[in-house]
Amino acid sequence: MAKSSSERVTEAQVVVVDADLREVAKRVKRILGGDAFRSIQRRDLTDLIREVSGLATTRLKAEMAARLTDQLQRQGVRVFPPLTETATSDAK
Image (cartoon, rainbow, N blue to C red):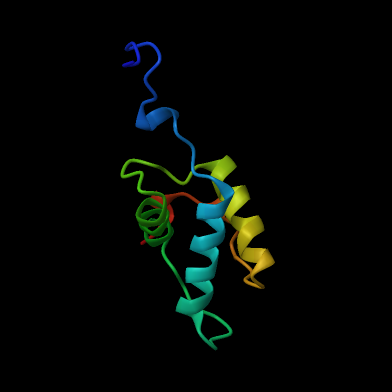
């Protein structure tokens, strides 16, 4: 039976799950390799989240930034400045 339009889930209603953020964190750790420090643009993290989650319009906002930071810390990756204190427009 087909769902009515009010029951359909749109992409905007789908959230990136922690398993996706865990995979993003693992990929960031691989990108870092053995480097103690590397700059990664916030836009690159957003693109990686989109790739892993399959959600082409997802955005890295405060709540997801906090969850991603937690997953990165679990991988031993420290983020500075904190993702919760930066915006994509901060990149020069």
